[in-house]
Length: 454
Ligand code: BGC
Image 1: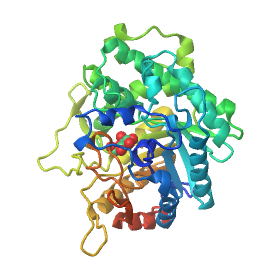
Image 2: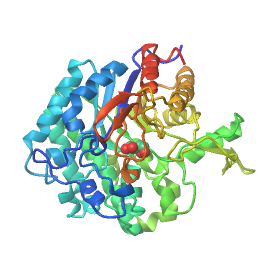
Image 3: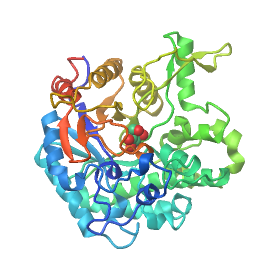
Image 4: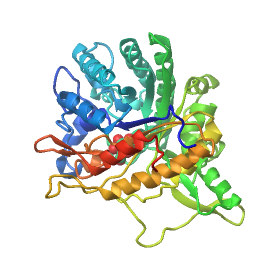
C-alpha cells in the first residue's frame, strides 16, 4: 500500500523566477520585467533580470535534478520569449531555448511538465489592457497553439494556468503582483471571466494543434480548509468551506476554490458568489461556460497550508484559531501537514480527476554552514510530515498522480525578491553556485522508496 507505482515525483519552477536572461535572444518584456523596475513593489528592488541564470545553466541544473532522483520537472514557458509582442511574430531563439531544455531533460530521463502561464504576461499585451481585454482568450489560444505544434512531439503533460487566483487577486485586485493594479468590481469579474475563458481556449489549442496526444490540466491554488477534528460534522464543514465563499468581500472570492474550479470542471459559477456579486459579473452565455469547461485529464493543486474549521451550531464552518507559537515557515505560513490529506480527498470527491500536487514546500532562511553544506532539518521534517499525509490519502483511495516539490532551487520569490528560499538546491546569487541542501538528499530517498520510507 502507499503510492501507486506510477506515482510521479518531481520538482517545479517558473520562468520568471529562475530563467534570468531577461533581455537576451529577442525576448520581449513581460509585466514582471516592468513591475520590478517600479520602485516599491519588490523587496529591496530585486528583479528577475538574472535570477538563477537557468537560461544558461539549465544543463548543470538538470544534472542536479538527476542527482536528486527527480522523475519530472514542472517548469513554465515565458510567453514573451516565444512571442515578444504576445501575438504575431514568433521568436525562434525563444523556442530554441525550450527545445534545448526539453531535449536535455529527456536525455536525462526526466519527464517535462509544461505550464503555459505562470504570471509573466507579455508587456505588449498588458498595454492593450492585458487580461481585461476581451481578446485575451484569443491571444492565449494563439500562444498555446504555437507551443502545442512545436513541443508536443516531446512534451506529454501540460498545465494551462498556474494559480489564476494570484493572477487576478494579487495582480489586479491588491496590486501586490504585476501589473500592480487595483481594479474595481466590474473589471475584477470581467478579468476572471477572461482568464477562465483563456484556460478553456488554451485546452482547445493544445488538443487541436498537438502532433501527438497530450494530457492537460490546470494548477490553481486557493484557500483550503481542514476539519479541526475527525467528527463527521467537522469534516463536512471543512469540505463545504473548501468550495464555498468564506467571507463577504470580493477579496474572499479570489481564494474561493469553488469559484475558480467549479466553472472549469462543472461548467458553472457557484450560486453563492452569483447571489452576492452577480450585478458585477459581465454578461455571459452558456456557450462561455461550455468554453471554460473543457474536458481535462487531471487536477493540479498548489498546496502549502490550510485553515482549520469546526462545525458551528447550524453545521456551517467556523474558523478555529491557532495556538500561540503555532509552527510557521520563514515566510510566516503556518505548517499544516494535514492539508495534504484532506484537500486532495475533497478535490477528488468533487471533481473526480486524478490529482497532482503541483507545488508544495517551505521557505527557510537557509545559509551555507561552516562545513560548506546547507543543513535544513526543518524542511526535511516538513516534507516528511506533509508527505505522510499525502500517503494516507493515497491509501484511502484518492487517485494521486504525482507530487512536485516547490522548488527545485531557491529563486525569485515575487514581491519578496530573493529574501525567501524555497529550494531543495541552495543558490548563491553572487556566484550562481548551487549546493544540494540536506533536504535534496533526503527527498532522493523518499523518491527512491516511492514514499515507503515515510
Ligand atoms: C507560486 C510560486 C511561488 C510559491 C511560493 C506559489 O504561489 O506558484 O510561484 O513561488 O507559491 O510562494
